[in-house]
Length: 133
Image 1 (cartoon, rainbow, N blue to C red):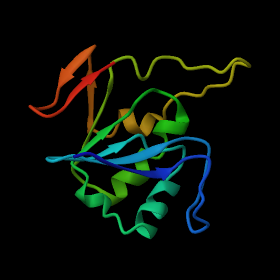
Image 2 (cartoon, one colour):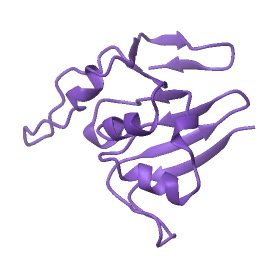
Image 3 (cartoon, one colour):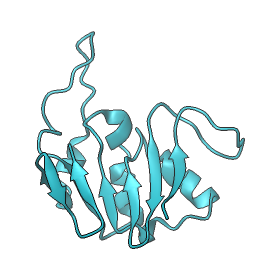
């Protein structure tokens, strides 16, 4: 069984939830509670609280790619969770520019967090989870 809860994205039918450009999902598997991306701000943490989700229970975090709207909420996540490691592709902190030249890359606080595991093309976390980039 896998349960996926949207913590933040651009739309919501629930007026109690905050929306923003970006994405954050909570994924529950048999053995893990996973934060998949953290949106562009820490607002997803407010939605988690409103949904009754305890972010301290997250044991693994994954960053899908280097854009700010998926990565920049991690510093706020770290305020709610002191132990989950964040898995990301080894190239995640390369230069990311928009078509008009703006930097749209991930925040440097994530790189300096001490909780980042940089992966290659395939990375087995355990017998249940393998990441492919």
